[in-house]
Length: 314
Image (cartoon, rainbow, N blue to C red; front, top):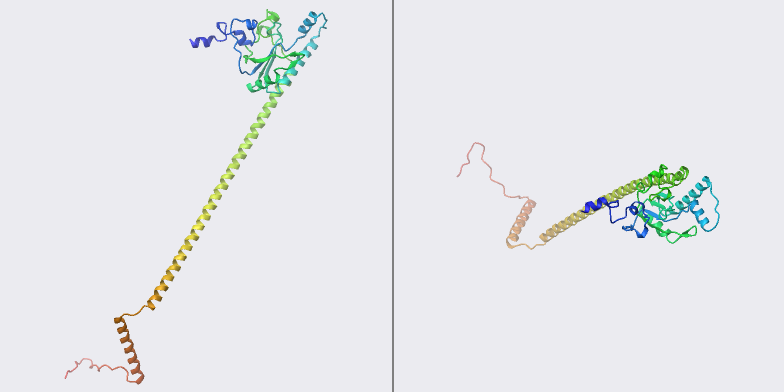
């Protein structure tokens, strides 16, 4: 069921939603229509209802007021339309990039003089809606709202483009008036070229900034790495100096301990046995020295027997 309703949404088979409002953004029945008009809350397209007054409409209004309006030539009528088109386009382009702008030539009340302006994004359409709402143009209050139309292929009258529409100016589809190639090139093509050029410049600047940022990051990484290396080198040097100082202190302590042991040994009191042994050694040395001084010398050894003879013991 849901797939069926989705397939017929906005078509003639849809008995709930108005297909004309969905395609054109306007309905000849207006608020009296038996079907629902779903007005969008956001859209890329703005509808300025009955904004453009054609020379025919101005002449009809003058005739109804009992005044005469001179008939304009084709050249003057073309100038009148393009002057209006350029004026509105330049004003709305201040709030966002305009992709399409169409003016209806229909004479029916729901399409006469409607201006459809499609922006590149919804933000531009919203900014233009807030700026234009409540303003006047040519002495008339502007009525602007979001339109559900984003593709004008289904909204335009194709027979009218071929000059074959048999319904005339009261057709229920858009009779869009074309602008000259010179105005189109000045408003759209040149702007798109400038936009493309600006986009290229932006992309180029972005790439440059990215490369610069990459180089800056590489420089920062190298700097941090060098700092870490220097910090590690300084730390190793400090550790080495600390170890050297520790070894030097340890050697000094060892030398001091050895000196203290030698000094303690020199001043250590002698025991009894050791004292008597040292005394005997000293006495023997003194007697030997006295005998050598007197010429007697130490007692000699008995003569040894000649070689080959055994000593005779008597």
